[in-house]
Image 1 (spheres, one colour):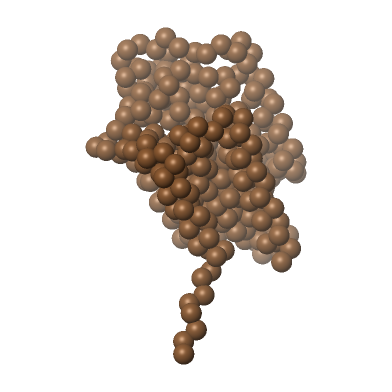
Image 2 (tube, rainbow, N blue to C red; image 1 turned 120 degrees about the vertical axis):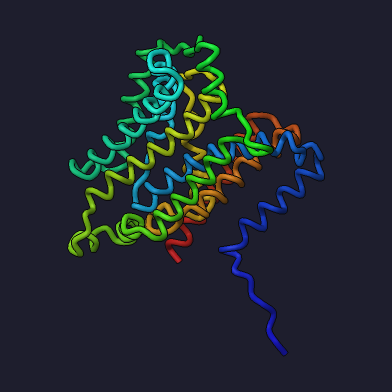
Length: 314
């Protein structure tokens, strides 16, 4: 008699829970699975996936990027300000590069000056937040020309057939990130550093260069997420990224990326992003209040972090 097939719940547990969650929310309110709601939710999920993927790079290298939220706000302001001068396309690129530059500075502070990641990125959080609030006075930037607004909006609110534009970009970027982590020397070095940074240095790995690139990628992906959000709203918000940092860390850990480095990847980032976005949306269509939703998502993130700690100890 053959033994029943054993299921690896560490690998398939979260996907199974995700599909059960979809079924439950659909039963509670059939509008949850409507085409309109799915388009809206996947659009948000694509943006969160980009931000979570950036945080995943930092976590894989045994670090963390606490500046993602403030960088997103800076990119929103910088994008709209640049569009005033350069037009929609060049201005958008300039805004995204502003965010990537913040990540580059984070990497230099961590790799070459020896500042711990949590302190370097926390410092960047306050610096960037202060700069953007001084520049804007806390006021939202608006008044784009009709042409620039139409061109910008397509990136955040447009559709290619039945698929939102941010989803198309997220799929392309996701495959690129998967290839980088799986098949390139840079990707393998990230895992090596996250697994054992002390042993990596004597092995001749260019740790400092890798760390700088890791935090540049983290900020760049957060900047892209901010760009799609800004494009959809066609406005520059000084506090755009406040809520996204917690979701980025939570999505990465919930998907299976270890807070201790060296374990995780793009698939984990995608899975964690989808669970958080669909959980939040399902709670909304189920009539759960904003404060209760935040509490529930917070509990889910704490449990995910606790699970990561337990796995490390075991």
